[in-house]
Amino acid sequence: MKIFKNGLLTGLVLQLAIGPVFFFIINLTLQKTALDGLVATLGATLADYVYITLAIFGIGKLLEKERVKKIFGIISSIVLIVFGIFVIKNVLIENFSAGVNTNSVSLFSSFIYTFFLTLSSPLTIFLWTSLFAAKALEYNYSKKELLIFGFSTGLATFVFIGTAVIIFSSIKGNIPITLIQILNLIVGCLLIGYGGIRLRKVTKP
Image (cartoon, rainbow, N blue to C red; front, side, top):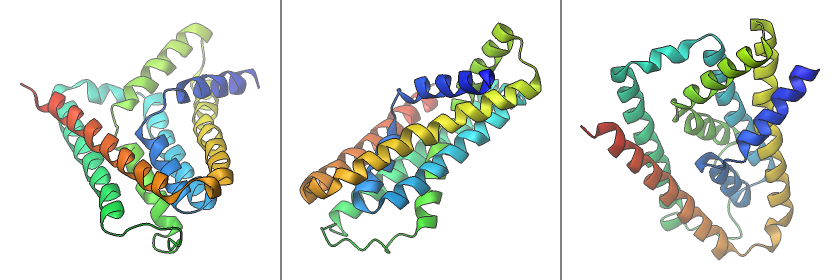
């Protein structure tokens, strides 16, 4: 129980570093429904668990190779840029309104978009690898205890973002459509900008 609590608190602290995925999910919640937001949150959580599992089993060492790191960096940056373009395209072409069709994008799509968006930051595995290495040394955790710690740390993603989804969903009726469209544009620009900066750094000789 103590290990679980320690992992959950550690995960919640990490979630305070809000990134593009958080804004993407909140944006999705405001456009569609709380259920879409929660399904998207599940996608992000499962993606985190993929990296947590890899980190626990030491796969992070593979990414220490410059060639592998560069390939992952280029692919993930392009994915972020494409997602950003997709978001902006929806604002400019599909013209979201108060009567937005919540069936235009399925729950499965909400899950898949966010799952792959979260996976587009594979270097996050370095964070998990470093974190688990530190905890293993600090508390002398066994592999089994690291699995419990990893599970609770990943669970924090769903708890933190899921709570935010519920809060924003409850007040979205008071948020003007124009503000939602502006948020769409901001999210799109953030994704493109973040992806562009990363791509430049990765390809810089």
